[in-house]
Length: 369
Image (cartoon, rainbow, N blue to C red; front, side, top):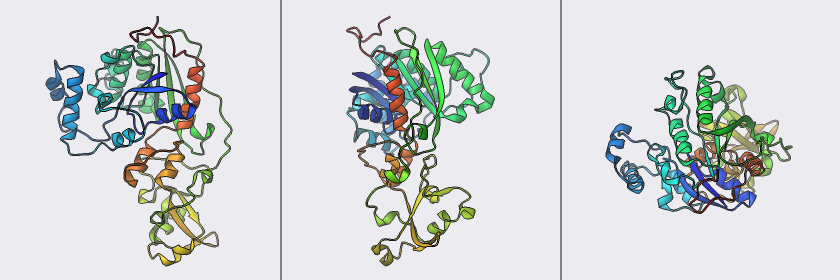
């Protein structure tokens, strides 16, 4: 069994990957604030929780997030799809004490927002990243010492701030006693018809015996986006006149909308809204002629209707299977676009399993050295 922890957990891409691979795993903890933000300064919160136990800190942070009156929709989706309990869920990585989990996690997965670091060049260590969420991601790795971590981010991370940001991040990871490999991976090279380039970093703890890690070989793409479409689509996803004209006229949408692509563009948080992203143009169905909300126009010389992709289609095009959607459409689109391509994680996981033995822990969970 793999003991898994995730931060910036989203809707559980690595959990999906392990499930689809048939690998037994347990969620030790997950953490995501659901894009909710506190009006209280971090320093003030840290003063309030000083001296509290990890459990008391966790309850206090949950309390002040609940007092915002905003729902954590990420948590709502996560709990509807994975085996987790309240005591294993954290609202805010900044206040998560990793010492509680030292030696009790095999794999940590997450990808923090990475601002440039103003103190670059002074120490080149973990302290250089203070004030960023990356600092807390790296801090947890230092405190927990998992066997492996996977870090995912936009490919622009490598060139951000003229490469300085990545230089600090790489140095920090290596200072934590991990062997680091990184690579920019496009989802369409791993069986998913989506142009989604992300940088993946894999760190192997130097205190464990392991083979040399290599990123997986590319996989030939055998499916098109059409293979992921729903058989039946609710009429509410079809567009009116303005929407039809916008998505089917490139000079109007300036490339913001794509139609009937075999390989879709990169899914994003704002997809399908303001008619941005990938759309389908199809032959009208009989009921469309009787629905005044749906515009029937002409596309490539044929009568046609245009529609959004459904949330389930977007999830399938991220590699999710049998996912229980419990949020509204706008939120579901956002959650899909913010996630990690599951097929990429599946292949990376298989490569990790060829490198690291996840068995052989002692009775108290400490890593064998």
